[in-house]
Image (tube, rainbow, N blue to C red; front, side, top):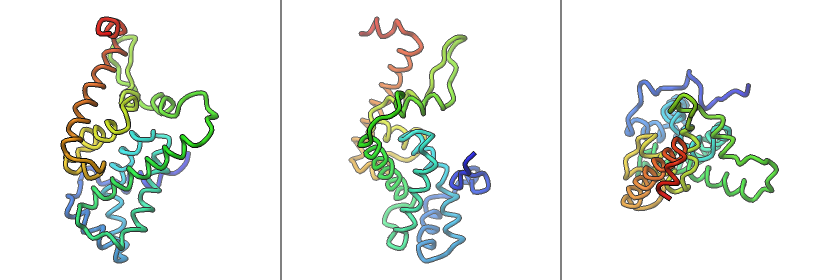
Length: 204
């Protein structure tokens, strides 16, 4: 099994999450060559970055994309001025990494018969909703449009504020609110359609 250097228990601090000010201080110190600060910076953000990318590009791609995100971040840390929180800054980089990955994947000829998002959804855990039925949350989220998925995952899964998500997604706060609301509606509709096939016929 391939080692996941960006997603290991020994680097995880999710039980003692550092606040944004502390993470930003670590980022600036890391940019000045402080190795301990660099390690603390990774520990503080790696799990959230992995989860974000897992939803945007699929769990199978999240390891490599998380590594690429931190490589890009460290290349640019010397120029990080701290005008925004380091957490928001890194998520902005992660989003660009995911977009670049999707563009590259779209440009490549399709060899697989199963879409990437479907394979990722099948690899994710299922939420049991009945004796003979299950709905995969990953698949439902993957079914959202890219913009709604980004906004929903950033705010509802990772807990970013609407303002932070707006900065990550590079759009107004009101747009984020609208995308999240529509994403919720889409998820509810998809859930009902999957768990009750007659629902679509009744509402269609």
